[in-house]
Image (cartoon, rainbow, N blue to C red):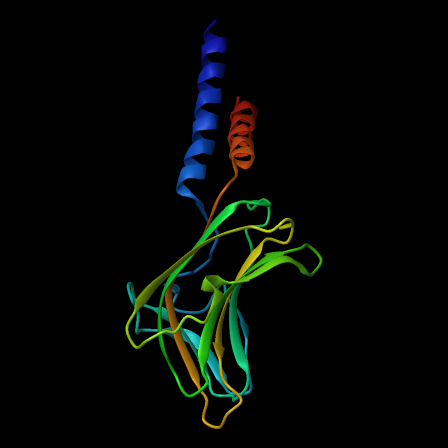
Length: 206
């Protein structure tokens, strides 16, 4: 009888843990606040005249990320690439948020894009978050978007931020970002699997 009560408690605990993860969301980013003092966790795709670094001009904490592009008619790109492999399922709700500011010369813009990645290459879904450029100002502003993972996320998901210049003389783009977050709320089926995974771990420890 005691064994039966322990098993029931374990089931409740495991399922509750799965539900809690579902409600709170699972954070996927690495070094989204740049508090390592560098760009660890980020992938950078430069132009001939671009820079990407941690900077002390932060919204909170000690550092932010600073992306500047001085090459006309190009895009300097930073990514949290292929994150959440094994944690994100098709159709999961994903929330992307960050603080940003910047300065753009004539023709300069900034984009935030989200990709559902396929293992081995390619994507199953792409989205320009907000459906338009960010239109940053010289003051920190908060951006938040809710979307859904595509039909195949075997390669995880990717958040891409750009400093994009126009094909005109003197076009520049500067983007600061801080407290970058990509969190996933599992579908009910995924949350249940998380709970059962916790139950399996409890059983293994016994």
